[in-house]
View 1 (cartoon, rainbow, N blue to C red):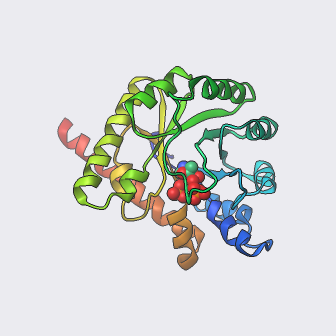
View 2 (view 1 turned 30 degrees about the vertical axis):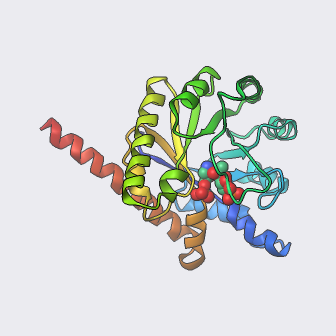
Amino acid sequence: MVDPNRLLLGVNIDHIATLRQARGTRYPDPVHGALLAEEAGADGITVHLREDRRHIQERDVRVLAEVLNTRMNLEMAVTEEMLAFAEEIRPAHVCLVPEKREELTTEGGLDVSGHFDEVAAACRRLSAAGSEVSLFIDPEPSQIEAAARCQAPVIELHTGAYADAETPDRQRAELERLKLAARRARELGLIVNAGHGLHYHNVEAVAEIPELHELNIGHALIAHALFVGIKQAVVEMRDLMDRAQQRVQAQRDAVRR
Ligand SMILES: CC(=O)[C@@H](O)[C@H](O)COP(=O)(O)O
Ligand SMILES: NCC(=O)COP(=O)(O)O
């Protein structure tokens, strides 16, 4: 039986679409990648439908909504166009993210406290459409508290600062911020996910944070898949996450003895 406390893996397939868009071809199809990722053990599929449509297209989201066996997590900006699209598709999960057209990737978390009314209204609309809403935020107490006040049931902590840390000290400090943030969010009753920039060499310390529910991982996993295949790339990531959780459990058991 699958452990109900197992840390879940959401596989972000955006960068399969990046390769397709580079040539304007029909291949590689992110939908194909999503189905293989599910077969290999992904617990969900994440797609970010960017305003500039640089990778995932509306067609991808529509087809995924029809064929996924797990669940879709649609990442999107808080715009009228995207809200109307999500209300039509009604994905299982919608993650609200900040977006800048000129950015290389999502540089930081959503400023929930600074745009409280707009984000709270989006949460209400999406919940009414039947989607579970999550807010992609930096591991900052003020943002976590604002997310709880918005009545979003889920947050996703942006792990980019941890992943990009250039020194071990900086990385330890960023990991500590993530741990404190996860603890605070759980105290407030939020479900806590995390993601961005996670890689095979930095995922384990994050996977050891006991309050986390799901990690969303894309770029590094799809890059690895180029060489080992997507199923193997998912299995390897899953193994690292499982082993990290088993270590935490073994430490807990040792303390109890
Ligand atoms: C919100 C987030 O962290 C991911 O969706 C990530 O943005 C992957 O896509 P990009 O590389 O386009 O940012
Ligand atoms: N929300 C984070 C995500 O979906 C994956 O981000 P990345 O692993 O592509 O950086």
